[in-house]
Length: 331
Image (cartoon, rainbow, N blue to C red; front, side, top):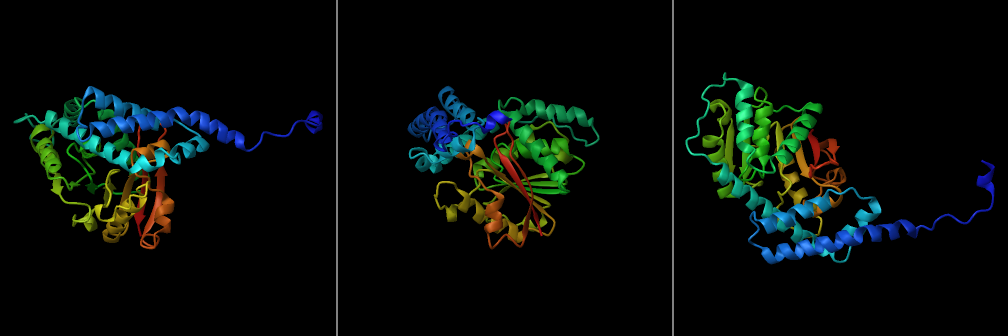
């Protein structure tokens, strides 16, 4: 240890990490700006195509890269990146909606042979449902997220008896996967979306196209309401708040989307019953370029929420699952 005491050159100066961040982020920034420009030129035609799929795939690949805090800060605060974030998230929202809508139509099968009895071989109908949905090329992403969410809810003691999914979209794969996993626990799922066409597509899929027992399908209700219009929060044991749900009446356009999301959370939490759980899909790291990020600090700082919601878990996946989750319990 004596050699550590000898005279040596001074330690590295503080700017070094920043220099590393600049070098590491330069290529990312250039690629993100390019993708944003290409998506903007293509809009509103952001439905599935070879070109559009390649752009979104590349964007997601960038956003799930592990980066250190300095690099993350340098990318998110870059003079080119910061102002385009709200528009980029809007483009991603549009692209995701069109992707799901396209595949919801492809998965519709008129007069599918549906098992009429709940006592049929459970493993068989579950396999058939998943096989039918597997035509959708990104199914595994939805399955992995649904499983992560379900087991996190069970870990904090949540009841899954009655679920409301806000922002369910035209392809309610999360609800479908939850029912496949827990047919003995779930009594009802309300899929809620403000888009009438999305609800119509979801209804056709759930009622007529999935080869599951009729009693299982009858537990799913597809309802055309906005997050503010939905009237049954007080009856739900778990409320899922989709990553793309924001409050159009309170769109602050402040870059991170947190204020708009928080307004909806406050509206929902006020109506929830005690001991019910609110699961919020969020984002961390570069994933914030895709979805608005909500953090526990946002909930703690809200005068509306600090006395009625208790954050019980926050999960940040570091694999291909894009969304983070926050689970809060209604006090």
